[in-house]
View 1 (cartoon, rainbow, N blue to C red):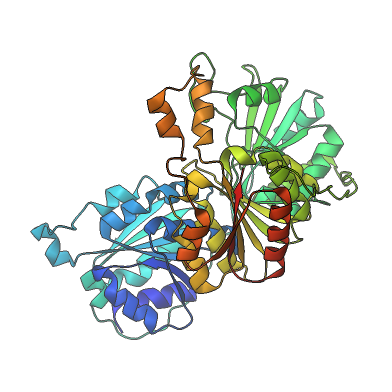
View 2: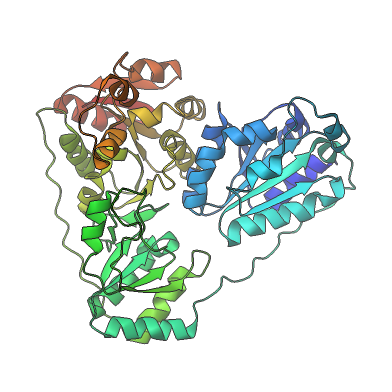
Length: 514
């Protein structure tokens, strides 16, 4: 066998059996090796942002990394925006980036670049394979780092290491060490804070936002009166009727400051301290009150469910938190198509066990609150603020969970960054319903202009913040990618199209003109 074969075998031995790819010449030996491994499912993306966004959605739902295959430094560079989102979601991922043969690098051919420097800002681990004998060890190290951090590993594969020969041999899976547990002293301090009757919030993210962990967190909050919150941006939340809800820290800075203003203590479990998404003149960067005590009880790589259980045991919190009885949301049947009416129609119609991928941006601020009483579902969101992840995120989630309906909620401006993912949905026959909120504007940037005191837009500002000259036709673009699509201009249209899309399998796009 050669180095590329050993790389595939090592990935497969560690249960990495999906590869999202956009390869080039230097990766052809790896492509040939993938072709010899039918156990590996290979998914082509027509841009590198689709590749990494889909790998992010896949790992959030599969709880294990996919591999990506990217072409040299420029290919990795094209992928960076959605790698930034994956980094902020703490998503496990293994990037395989091809490079020139080691003896060719000194020639400084046109595609030669400093791949390590491009990779480091988004990667928690970066390694290089220059010889076939390094393949197995470096690949195992990349997998361990992706799983334990958790986060992104980038593995740079020299072409001559890929084609170089190796003796045949079986690869054995490496066993991961247990995750770090919280400090006993910190557990006692957290219990003291919660017993002190001070106004306290517990802020969660990561695996602390799964339904079983939320049940334990709910017991703690019920026993102590603490507020249960989640970060503003989270990779995955299990939520809906019958599940404990953690209120999300708002995005708009004034709302966030008011939301947190009465707190005297905060306990962080996987989460970071709440800070402003941006700086604004005359407004603070830290969102918590100045004298609020902050205790970081557990980091994102720690055993978060165990931390919650330990804290509950320390407090003697055994009584389950009351969950509001399920009350079906009233679905509006007719009327004008507005952000509010579409959000309510969607929240009322989410099928049980669906996966909702949210890149609505401004259109979605109301939606999250509405879905507290929606049918139980998984909620995946834009985490790093780099727009263009929504359609790829839904694509990857559908690869991970082919038996579940995936609903992609997409702003029109950010959807244009990676609409090529619709082609992948069509090719793979993925069960995704994409709803495009077509307001023909970068509405979030219009709001940001107002936040810095600019309320009257002149010609230049208007032309940079609107998408109406010409208006984007999402039905035509979707059909050009092989995805069936239709436009809704009334609420009756929307409800009819959405219900039909839920009944069928395969990709479908609804352009909601709001």
